[in-house]
Image 1 (cartoon, helix red, strand yellow):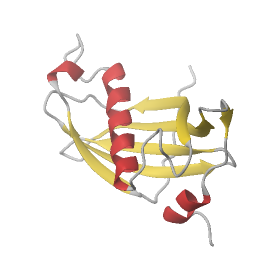
Image 2: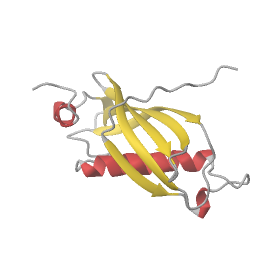
Image 3: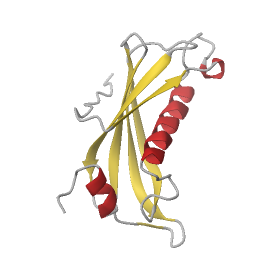
Image 4: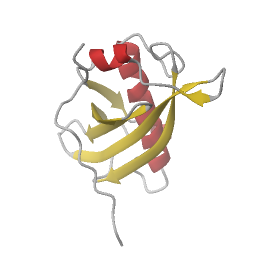
Length: 143
C-alpha cells in the first residue's frame, strides 16, 4: 500500500499551541483523526487572525479548502499540548498550500498535514486571484 509522504517546507511562518480536549479523544483512547482536522482548522484560523484575516475576509476575497492530506506519525493524548508549525508550499494564481507540522509538548512528532486553499468570491461563485498583498506579507513576492 502506497502511503502519503509529505515534505513540509523548512520556513515556518507561524506557530501556535493547542491543547487536546477530552472531546478530541476517540474509542482508541487517543486523538481522533476527525479531531485533528478540527485542530488544523483552529490553527489555520489563528494564523489568519494574526494577519487580521479570516477565511471569509482574506485580503478582499475568501478561502475554501480544496484538499487535505495527513500523514499520521504518533498518537496524541488528552491534555497534550500540540505545537503546530505552519508553512506555505506551492502557490498558484488562485491558491496555495498550507503545511502543518504537529508535535507534542515533548517534541514528539504527531503528524504532518497539508491543506490546499483556493481564493473564492462567494458573490459571483468563482475562484479569484491570490491577493498580492498576502504574497508580500509572507515574502513570496518582491514588490
